[in-house]
Length: 499
Image (cartoon, one colour):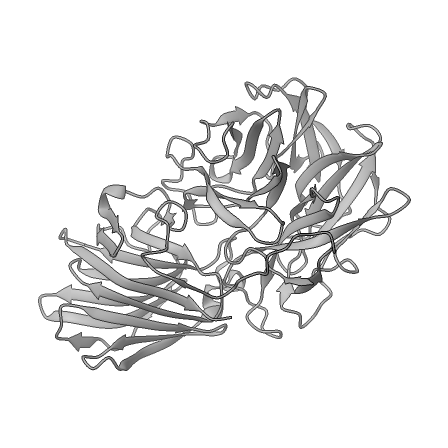
């Protein structure tokens, strides 16, 4: 039996995994999007259900004015002595910290700061000791992996930071984890940048402080040589042994929009590949060192077939799990109910490095059919496809002294354009978007329910290859008031994908 990658789709990068109480848990980066650090649970490593976030309060994370793709970088989740720990970086403030909880389904603690620089921190526990690992630069300015021992109760360093390994020479040495399997400590990392040259390497030592000997066949995993293959950028990830003795590597990768179109706009996603141990104590990752779309499952796994079709509506979207916001939201401007959403606009727009009135869900598939009724009360409201404040598309319903108009607006860097403004004579307008891998098609419905074409927009201009950054497209409902305080209502939302 086979499963398909990615196993978690859309903007969920930099996965880290752990096992506890017969189940598996995963966290991912969230950057400047709030709530921070999505948290997932699984019983078979293939099917993952989101159960919460680790950072749900403004007191835990300052995102108020962070740049796009700043904020919360790669997290690590670990379980030790009945407690879960999530360690991460607020890159905008060059601050490493961890939070913890004794109940994975409840709130996490306030942050505990660790005074070691670098990003992509990890924790390793052994014999009542805790080690803190991150990337960094040595005294010569070369990229390296560094480690110190900390007091897990306070975050205080109990040793100086020591440089462990400089990697294999690839750029952007990152994503370190340390494990002990048998008599060896294994130091895992990623290099090449979280893009088309991404790769995974590792080394080992019988002493946790080194010296570390590189795996002779590094990189142990990469898709960098698979031209014309949809899954690219296989890299940054984490290793786990499941309850049945199978070994796994969960890692980031992305799907490009076409086999020969090297753009991706859904963000970095979670893929899963097997780990195979060799007799000499080294291990191999993936299928011939790569991540394929289809992967054969071990016979001893109890597996529920994946489901990719869905229809997301106001009725089945969870306010706390599914909806997300640009930076820290002003929740007094949001009102959810089982039939819809009311948004009170402010003068903060989607172009600003701030928090507009914007409630979003991650785009997880290329092909979507999206419908939503908008009852305009704010000056401008509608549906946005958001990558960052300089790269986003909107279908806008504008209400002004001349009437109500529908049009599209496309922002690509310092360039923007608006389509023809269509005047409507109704209190409600239905917006309709058809999403494909390479294009969005924007429509509204006339009084007879027929599509009226507004414009098309190319997805590649929302891609990381154009926009830069580390996020993925978010489908958002928004409202803007430059002067007034009007409220727009959204009803009958449907975001539908048929696999």
